[in-house]
Amino acid sequence: MKKITNLEIGALMFFLMHANFIGITFNSLINISKQDSYLSILIGFIVGIIPLIIYIYIFNYEPNLNLNEKNVKLFGNIFGNIINIIILIFTLLLITIAFSNLITIIHSDYLSKTPIILVIITFLIPIYYAVNTGLKSICRTSLIMLYITILLIILSNIGLLIQIDINNFKPFIHNTKSIFNGSIYFIMYNITPLYLINIIPKNSIMHNNKTVKYILFFYFMSILSLFLVNLNIIGILGYKLSILFKYPEFQILKKVSILGISSRIDSILFIQWIFEILIFVIIGLYHIINTSKSFITEKNNIFLTIYCIIILSLTLIVPNDLFLNLLSIKILPYIIIIFTITIFILMFIKINYTSKIKCTNNTSNK
Image 1 (spheres, rainbow, N blue to C red):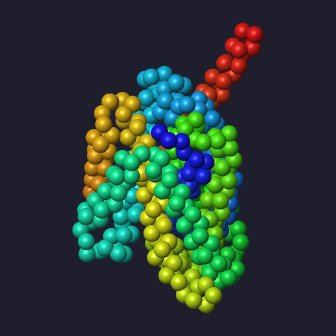
Image 2 (tube, one colour; image 1 turned 135 degrees about the vertical axis):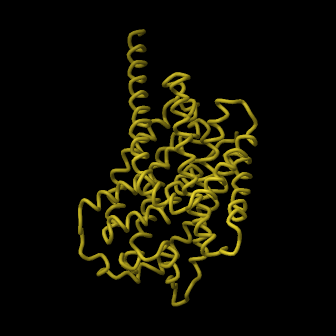
Image 3 (cartoon, rainbow, N blue to C red; image 1 turned 90 degrees about the vertical axis):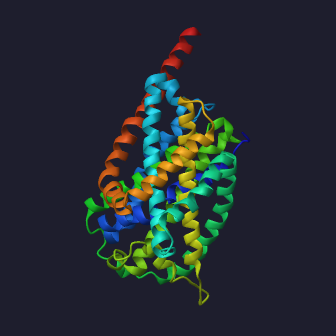
């Protein structure tokens, strides 16, 4: 595989952190933290550095290995593969919820007269093709889209920030407990998915001695862009009006005006959001395929077809309201907490313990 650049890693991070914000994270924030939801993002940014450091620590361990191989090396073949299966199931659940969220808004707002199964298949085809092309092609495409996205973010904020009404944020700090609870949701849905950067071995990245700096930079940049989205929505619509819309992010973009000229930037940014979710689903599916291959030696196409059928079936059979209301709000948060605490902290402890043992043995030999 051709080596991946640090900018391409940064682009993947950016889209992984953005994919769940629209339709899932913001809806949770506005219901929990109300006008203080922007403070939840700031607290989430600070607390989220902890799981980020854990991911980086795992990333630096055994730079020739990917996440699956690291688990096997750390915990042995049986227990390591059990952990890999748990991560596989968790990843499949996350990408299915994100994909269901995407299909719902497209079908309800744009293609309501089209059978939903055709909408699902239309988006699964490029996902299938992208996973088949390999990680390098996915990363290269993500980087191109990142440049376009940054330009759109700058343009939209120029047109929106001047329209903010400070009164929409009053009373300030209405409920500290709600602010903290909102920050937990933000961490779970927008920072936890960064574990997927560990599917890329460090040694497959060019100039990987600088990769951590790029990870930190894109972490800050992604948080800033999400913070501005939240700030604009609350500042212009107010939380009471925002809560009436299922997707207030697109309502607010209709208000963009640059140099007195109204812009249809909402339609362009809608395409950007589609791409964010597609990248998230593609990267997650890429990881799932590679995990499956470590158990059974088969061609990628076989596993890819099976998992695409599973995603199609779940999206088609399970109502989206069940996905979003029951899973993403009531059940999935607790699963994510248990998942993050038990698996990645366990990996962190095991790596730290292994490193100390290795260091002690080296000292004894000398």
